Length: 342
Image (cartoon, rainbow, N blue to C red):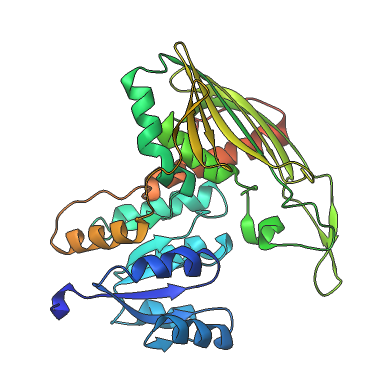
């Protein structure tokens, strides 16, 4: 393959999903050349570099942004750094793949959108929801084909035990690292936006029932991110939507999205991994994960000044951050929020 087709890729933060999905995905892309990686510790950076074949490690993220061999940056840090890193990478002429959750709040999302708009020849993509990737084509077909009829309501329940342990605090529970992101609410927001459309208005109730935890060092941590969220609203298409999210379901885990139409019902069971139409299984596999390949393909097209849409791009992803802001405002101010307001 000619050097002109090679794409220098770097990672700022390469743990968790980056090692589970993104690096294996890039291994399928012969154009992608792993240039540099920067984790929170030099030891971690060296381990990842040796395991995956990066040319070198970086001691800080500025080295990656300034590296002329790097064409595209994968941002795998916690949300508190996403805006700063994304904007810096775009301004340095790099393509950007940013891990979800997009950022801390609606204001930061708007700044990321503005940076992407200022650099239209660079690809800016947020990692999509795995639920959306797997079942979007199937669900959209059911809605478009008329098999469900007119969509009348959308019901979501996601309940698990992520927040139950009093002596375990993850970054997802720290507001200074995660901002307004709550549990998997943002992942579901992105999924519903793509399948059924956005909320026109919503009300929300949130609760923190375990207000203090101890971290691994024994220090007490005040928990401010809600552990239970209840949302009710109207989608722009007119359907009623209700959502219940809990990280305190210690016994029984449930994850379902139910679409009720005038002619039928579709249930997507996120745990069991199937789509039910009127109670009968129609899909137990769904589509494969090709996110990294799609990003690389879009970057290669951009190099030729061709347009190839990625999804979610920054403007699309910002819409779920708008929903996270609306949930926060609705719950803290005890009011219905119109999402058309900005």
